[in-house]
Length: 537
Image (cartoon, rainbow, N blue to C red; front, side, top):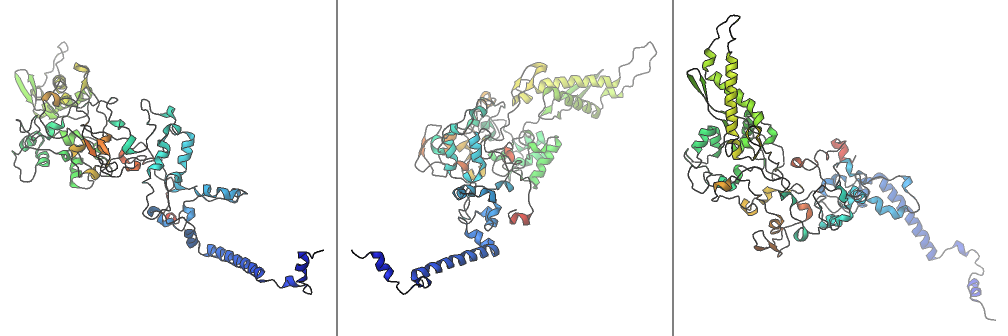
């Protein structure tokens, strides 16, 4: 019978019953590695306890973006802490999911992404890290997102959008994957819902002297503006070296301003002009970031110089005496019924200043049976009412006074001015910075805004919207070489300028566009002092 291998193995230890007390090299190596791991763990724990900042930074996926640089060594400043109850047999499988839980609301408040989002979409947006990615380096942007962060929903918006919550008459675009390919037309340029009600012609106002044709007669001069509105207003339009007989020539910047210039002499001048006519300062001087939107066009600042709103001269007869009452300025933004009281008060003031003959008459005392004499106040009041009604009819007559620029409804005493829609912000769902585009002429994007010959009939009609649609933007903002067809039918090659979604769109919306969308909602509920903020509290 052959000898078994186990017998040969056991024979090696005959007489060496304590062999297990003298381990070989492999066993000694196992002991050493186990001890080394234990020491490393103890050192790691010690370093974590005594130098937590250095260790925390070493555990990250890279340095934070510049706005969060103060929290490089403080994970708890942004990441939600988890307790023992969050641990379990499968907790290690949820580590990546827990890592995406942030406490951004400590510093960043704000409205929801879209009120019309489905429950699933709201849950997706509530986790900020699904779109905003940090630990990509100091120069990375947390707000300039890649298109894929937008198209993950907008490439098939019907899946994430509750159609029942859409605004009435405003269907959404289901599939948008790129600005250069399938971005829809700018919906806010559609004038069907709010047609233009103001009669205005850029062609007339940009002609030299504001005439119907370049070089036409009756050109507006500095002297005429001085006579109409005073010397201070004339100086606003005077260019260096111009005499009083110089023809006034406007350009786009004569009316369209990017910033109110708070604290400057120009700001103080505008405020004085508003106070003079009892207009609210916010109508002309709203606080805003320069470049984002132009300041509103305002009658007092931009129109009154050449088109003063003045009550006509009135004639009052008293007995055989006749008195001519001078015209006077009246307030803007008033309907005929509201303006009537101002006109009456203005003519009464003029009668007093010009010493109306009725003021010199003193009624004689009569007997009991005599007819009571007509008082001066009653005479003057009736005369002022008569003059005010006549002035009202003249100011609101067809193609004269207020109706020269405004469209009206009704007739006679029932006439009223059609409200002018607020067009301060045209692209209500996007942002546009004029300062960034100042290297291009205004007429490149706003055709029809240069001086040209135009008939009086066409000049006194509401002007079409002089803003080109999406294709004019694609001429520059599309991949280089892309063929873009402009509104006039010509083709250009795309300029290759960046055209990502966040170049034009904000993604957290609110209801205060002139001050930043959702600005009031974005203010944190519990701001911290500087020391606590730097500690990530």
